[in-house]
Image (tube, helix red, strand yellow):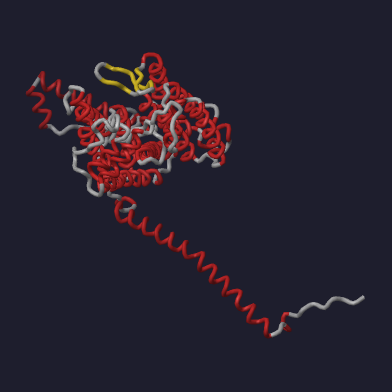
Length: 491
């Protein structure tokens, strides 16, 4: 039996050595090629972190720039919205025999109320809101049911309840209520979210599905899509396993197809968006087509504020869902870029607030609000630019609608409260009151003592003046032992 000889490494021919020497070089070149994008990404990441560190400060020296970026961009978008509502609605108001300032005045009134609510919420600890989460979601369900019973229908959607001379849209309030409620529930179940049954059942998904179902009964698929985005965002920021989103995406896609096929109006919108003609010969894409005409005719700097031609009944409801087209026509590409940059600043600043949160309730609430506002703005702009079929979704802070503007500003107030907590203690705007039983009790004691002193001074001015001149003695707190007095020596 002859054994097969083995090759000795030391006896390798010299001709083979150059071939083996090239292998490490080839690996090094491949590693360098792979490390190129990684180095570029690392540089961008380091620059991003350095930029925000220089802008915000670090540690206890955080100057609150994120807080003021959110506040400034929100106020700027709201001001642009009031101005553009005035420009876009004036022609139709004059044609209807109304004042050209009617819609703008209503929008300005709701903006004032919303800014006041935003200020209040920004000064309140968000933990207070957790206590009212269940009340908010129950109220949202009641209002959504009332819409189906006594609500007003417009343009095929039954979304509004008439309250005197004003109309209220409960589905907008349901967005904020659902975000707050889901953050509360997911925070309580934080340790159980690794289990699928606790992540989805018995509360979170059925509750969100109930809100979505009531909105769909009012035939408002656009708002239902935004509520679906809010639900998915809450689960994502809570840390639910990612494979569940794939399953949910398939289910939602199938449900959307069924809802689209079962509605002739939606089928016609999809056919018009793809360039085909509806069965009845109507052009449902008429609004989107004229919106593109408005964007195209604006050029770089627009035709001038108030000089739009498409708002002369070419774009129906130009001050609502298609106000972005009027911005592009009157202010041009520069004006649309300004709006996009303001939304980008708002989204980046809110994202900075989200990633800084260690508590799940805070992180889920802020992240859900971020996805709600930015997702809705993205869908609206996609519809106006022809990238998506026509869906009735307003542009946050800009489109006409008091309910949408009010709820959006309240949501920003919640985020501002979280951003304020990240500021240095000496730079934080003062709270309206402290959170907690001890702080609340101390505040109530101070107020009652001040009222008692004022009452005594009113009854006896001389005693009040003497009390002000006499230094006040500190009253021991309840439960504090009285100071010992030295015992007298016995004789």
